[in-house]
Length: 319
Ligand code: GZL
Image (tube, rainbow, N blue to C red; front, top):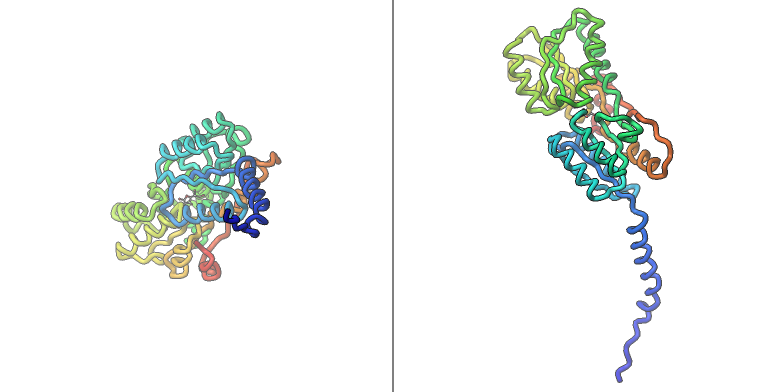
């Protein structure tokens, strides 16, 4: 009988290979803490930067991350969360497109016993009961800072067009409130038109074009709730034969790269940062929730301020 040729190396490695496989199985079966992230849309640099930051941090810490994209539809985002619940993820990070619209998703997750961390916007519910905590910026303060810059730049006299964010989003309501609270200190500053541009560049441009036709030279300033709409408004101002930064001052929020470049050109006056890089803070918080450690009901991001004095210094690191 032909002697079976022994494979000394394979036989020597067999126990180690078995252990690795078993460990792999055990780790997969017992240890993996799967995180779901319900993103509302992915059509602007801010959203893309936010998702990238969460993916990078998940990978760095070895967490499987299941990402859903609601493509700008609140109803789809609710069903996306239901899908994550059906997949029995261990925790859900939720960037709720609308404050009231995402309340049903919070209730479903609560019923399923899956903790939710709100990132970047708020949803109707009670922190510590319907969701663990909110991670985001102080949007009221962002609006106030934008108004403060505009008041100084116009010596407290301006006919202002406001391009507001998504209707029903907590961030839009807060940015509107903070701006108005601050300009109320300056009787010469009035919002002469306000309309949503839904945080989108093309919509911001179209809305600004229409308002220019109706309000004309009464407009001396634009306050946009985000850079994308501000960049659209700048296009409309130029198309009307006017000079942004001279005929009409523009101020916005976010701090994306294209905005810092517009600041350097003089088209955009200033942008208040709304930091989208949630990854580190989000996963520090995930770890605490996972290990049942106490978590505050609100954790604020740090936001900088960009104008002609510092845009060049930060443009390279911007998203
Ligand atoms: C802010 C975030 C806003 C950004 C916009 O946390 O909700 O949504 O300012 C984005 O650019 O669309």
